[in-house]
Image 1 (cartoon, one colour):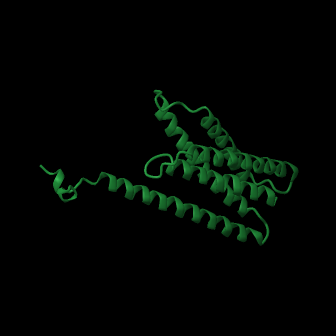
Image 2 (cartoon, one colour; image 1 turned 45 degrees about the horizontal axis):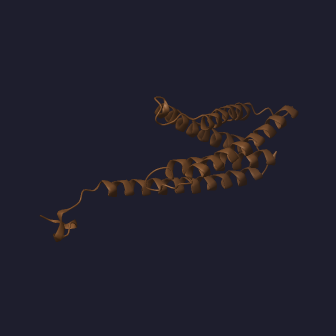
Image 3 (tube, one colour; image 1 turned 30 degrees about the vertical axis):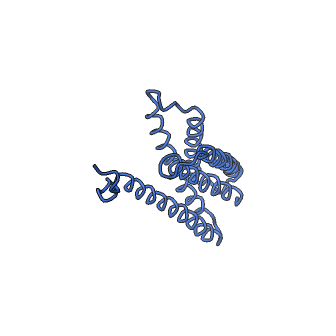
Length: 183
C-alpha cells in the first residue's frame, strides 16, 4: 500500500509539477534555457511512467481487497490517469505554432496539464486520508512540505519574470543617453 502512495506522490505529485514549472518558466524570456523542452519532457514522461505504475498498483490493491473500496480515491485516480494519458499523447502529437490550430492546441495542452496537477494533488490527499495508521499524518506533512517548496519556487520564478518584463518595458530617460549620442 505504501509503494502505491510513494510512487504516486513522486510521479503525479512531484515530477509533473516540476515539469510544469520548467515548461512555464524556462521556455521564454527571461529564463530562456535551450534545453528546457528536454527537461520538461523528461519530467513529464518520468512522472507519467512512475504515476502510471503507482496507479496500476492502486487498481490491483483495490481489486484484491474487499474491505477497502475507496470509491472517491479510485474514481479520481482513474480520471487523473485518463487525463494524464491524454496529456502525454498531446505532448507527442503537438501542433506547430505556425499552424492555424497551434495556439488553441497550446492553450488546451496547458489547461489540461494544470487540471491533471490539481486533480493529482487532490487525489494524493484523498489517498493519504484513507491511510488507517499514524503514518497518515506524517505523509500529509511530508507532502504539504513538498507542495510548499514547489509553490515557493513557482511564485519566486513568476515574480522574477514579472520584474524582468517590467524592466524591459521601461522607457529610456534622456539622462541614460550619453552626450555624444545627443544631437
